[in-house]
Image (cartoon, rainbow, N blue to C red):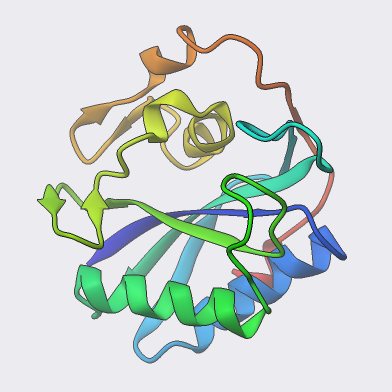
Length: 164
């Protein structure tokens, strides 16, 4: 199954956190990062008094079912030392499942597609790097960008090519 993951970090060495996250996903059994967006520097959303984030979208191929992928992502976050103390607050690593192919799923722990992806420029702009036509698994997401005010975003010159 293909997954689109959104990865963000704003604590510690943000560049290193992104690179180590990709390495960690690639270490999962029968799982490969097959494409990555550029790395973007973005304003925080929700809780403003914190450092800017680095965000990237990853296209991942895996044998994992969605709940298994969620568990793997939470495990990677925990391995980085993520603590959930302030809602939308600073975090060393945040991994969200945005899409699991064209699957639509709602359980107590997981909603796919991600319920707020269409309100977040830091998710949508990197998605365009992976899906330049603005359509992912039959979902036209490009038009959502026009409806978002603020949320400054800038492409960095960080290269991830050696990690894909």
